Every structure is written in structure tokens, then in C-alpha cells.
Length: 290
Image (cartoon, rainbow, N blue to C red; front, side, top):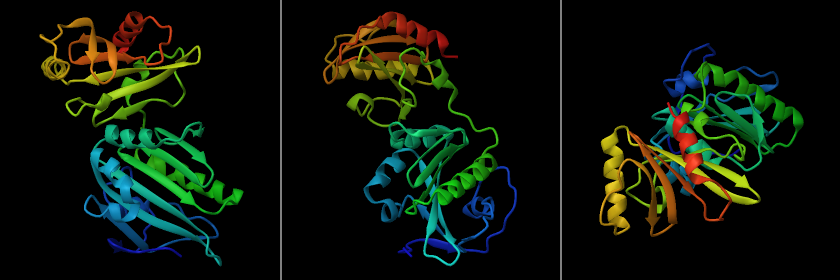
């Protein structure tokens, strides 16, 4: 069995029903007993200081999403060397957890109603619940193991957060032509710009051509005003756009239709030249944001 333990805490596993996960010990206590499987007493806990040792180069993306800690533990099938691994990533907020979950979400997965959202593919079940992004993985392709993994996920998710839901702002994106499970939250360097604030984005297809809609929450009107001021400087514009509709001549991305309303900035990138009414779509998106 694998393991190069770099940071671990070993403690007795206690099975209990807890409302929210606050510590690695509480998380493990939420895991179900599974007939024919043994939950390891050995629990590894990784922080930002050593996450790279477990997931190598992928760690950078987690750290950008306000990663707090990852708890890893195995189930081993009795009498065999087969195992299922849980990696439970805790982030600062549900938004941060969604950011890394959505960035890693596989194209065309089998959607599962687990937690806020989940999916399965060969050898894995991933889900989002509260501030936790949980991965259940195995190298065993037995259908019984796949069912066991889903059982773990369905048991654990509501214990982490019984009211888990996707960020409400995602409901604002127009449904027509939207690609399923395409919503993401980009926390760093949106559109390739370091000065950009985090952005919510969804991908659309029309007539075989792709375009994206996005929302940036500046928290205040002044927050968006500062962002647009930095943007104008980058684009060598003589003045900062005023609140309302305008087109930004992005030096990296071409012309971007935008709409500024209060603390929110809405926009569309359409490199493919999809036949859309950008102004109408931006108004529809802005009207739906609460």
C-alpha cells in the first residue's frame, strides 16, 4: 500500500453524527462504517506548507483558492490490498471551495445530487459541500467499489453541510445556450490580468460557436470604479468608463462588451464571433443578479 507520510496525525476513529466539519478529527468521525472495509486509523493532514508534497504542482491552484488544510484517509477492503482514498480539502469559504472544484471539474461527467454538486467517473466520486471539496478515489474498477464510494459521499456530504448549495449568483446566468456544468469562479488573473478581481463565468454555445458571460462583484461601486481605472490604464485609455454600458478595448482579448451597475461588472467575451445580442444578454444577466 502507498504512503510517504509527510505530515500526519494518528488518532482513534470515532463514529458520530456532527453537523459541520471543523477539524480533521471531526471529519473522519463523520465517515460511515462499510461492511467488508476497514477505515484506517492513520490520518494525514496537509496544510499550505506541505500540500505540494502530496499533490505536486496542483497545489498552487489550491493555495490561490484560500486552501486551509486537506485531510486524507483510506478505506481498505478486508483481506485484499484494494483501497479507497478520501482527500477532504477545506477552504476559507464555500466560494473558494467552488473555485477549485469548478476548475478541476471534468468535461461531461455523470452528475450526482450530492452536497451542493457532485459527479462520478471511472475510479472517482467528487463533490462540494460547504467549504469542503471532497475527492473519493480508487484504482479498483469493480462496480461494487464504485457503489461503496458513492455511499461514502452521500453519507458524508450532508454531515459537512446539510444545507449545501451552489453559490446563488450562478442562477443569474441566462439558461439559453448555456453549456451544462460550465460555471466557474476564477479567483486569480481573470482574462490574464493580475489587477482583475475574482469573476464568475459561464460558457455558452450558439451555432457551434462558443462565448462566455461573466460577473465581477466589486463589493462596492468604488471597488468596480478602481478596477475599471486600472483596466483603462492597462488599455491606454484616456478616461475611466462611466456606469452603464460600454465596450472595453482589451489589449489581450479584443473588444469586450460590458455593463457596470453599482458593485457589479458584467461582460461577454466572444472570440468565436457567435451571433448574439451582447447588450440584451448583459441586461438580462444584470437584472437577474440580486
